[in-house]
Amino acid sequence: MKIRIASRESRLAMWQAEHVKSLLLKLPEVSEVEIVGMTTKGDQILDQSLSKIGGKGLFIKELEAALLAGQADLAVHSGKDIPMALEPEFKLLGFMTREVPTDAFVSNDYASLADLPAGSVVGSSSLRRQAQLLAKYPHLKVHPLRGNLDTRLGKLDRGEYQAIILATAGLKRLGLESRIKANIAPEDMLPAVGQGALGLEVLSSRSDLDFITKALVDPVCTQLVSAERMVSRELGGSCQVPLAGYAILNNDGTMHLRALVATGDGKRVIEAEQSAPLAEFEQLAIDVVAKLKAQGAEALLSAGH
Image (tube, rainbow, N blue to C red; front, side, top):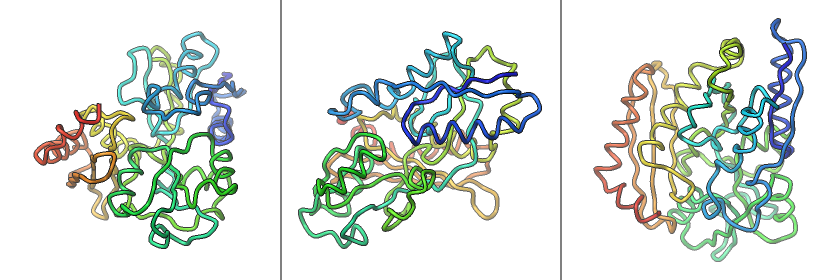
């Protein structure tokens, strides 16, 4: 079987597609793999924040259109770019083994967030990062930062920002780990839902591709990310709302889930956490959401829309 992978054309997205291609070529069912590169609306509109132009789903619409048109068989996405509810024509096979899910502090002049002097400009395209930054460091300024990884690093190197916050996973995948001054612990900045995990999407009708699930999908990672995604779905999460969710496997084999919602200025942050058996991830997500709502999360969320 020949498999065509739909991918964005950014360097990171192409790395992800090449990574999946290399794994697919090891399978006896696969004879050839082609990467179909395309530019998405999310890649084209760089002068506005994602929350204003329609959210992260803009990074996958063209890829889904290629699946529907029969131009591609499989789409590879960053976990945090996948909408919480897919259209019925599509299904997620699951998520691959997760790379480090943390955020990275990147600066040419300072060693950590705590070292930044008052008034320093930090670049981030994420309301989630902005809210958590301002909650802990209200003396800093957070300015929007869009574009692919190389574009963002270029803006830092030109002195437009004193520091920028990026996903650790992307820097590691592109061999740019040396740019990381500090990995920000999840306790200090809770990661985005699905951060660091790659999701595999196909048409719902393509049962002939189910063999990919067994070969490439990590069942534990899929349960962890599914719990995070369910929190976001239950809260109506979108790019308009600072929301974070992060699940890990405890030493005893249970799942621990932490979630957070906040105001964009970081002045109000609501957090909740709980553990449960892996198989009960859906109920765990519902329980964590109930804890957030009990603290007034819904009022925060409605204010963000």
